[in-house]
Amino acid sequence: MPQRMDVLRWGYRLGRDPRITTHLGLVARALGATGFLLTGDRDDDLFDNLQSVCQRFGGELETTHVPGLKHLKNHVQNGGVAVHLTMYGESYHDAIEKIPRDKHLLIVVGGAKVPAEVFKTCQFNVAVGNQPHSEVAALALFMDAWQGHKSTLREFPNAELSIQGTNDGKIVVENNSENTNEDV
Ligand code: SAM
Image 1 (cartoon, rainbow, N blue to C red):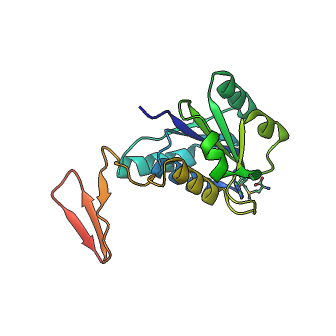
Image 2 (spheres, rainbow, N blue to C red):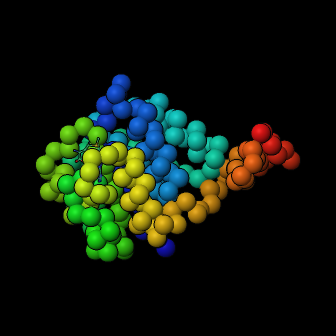
């Protein structure tokens, strides 16, 4: 049974971060996280939007506000492994070989300045290239590499809608009805 994997968005700011943080939540869900956690400001609407995607497209994503450092320290003290994505870290190509696979994995991504204590508490500070780019890109690339580049090959149970990928138009299947909406 694969170990649980959660994503923690550090230092969420209402007003400034909702769009990119929603994208982090969507990546977390689509690429196989069990939970999406926020520290910083509280935003129930953001979590509602993510739950609405789960409702329509299936699967489950636990969405929770957590007290940042306390949660991180508890996670590590309870035997979990914490990976902080930062451009200052060790290359993910090398780090992925060292990160234990038999432990609950918490992936931490920043936004606002990440305090030094996060760097110290996480057992792994991991870079997806040592250039500044985006937490969304870093998360997606790390999660995909962690799962052997198969992170998007998964089923989403109980979906109201599923998409049959096609090169030509859009095929959306409504699973509880006979309808297939071929919207070109
Ligand atoms: N100075 C920041 C840093 O430590 O990476 C860049 C801030 S960036 C706008 C916000 C977040 O994106 C960072 O906290 C980090 O989680 C992620 N990020 C950006 N570039 C990254 C990279 N090259 N490798 C890993 N994570 C990165």
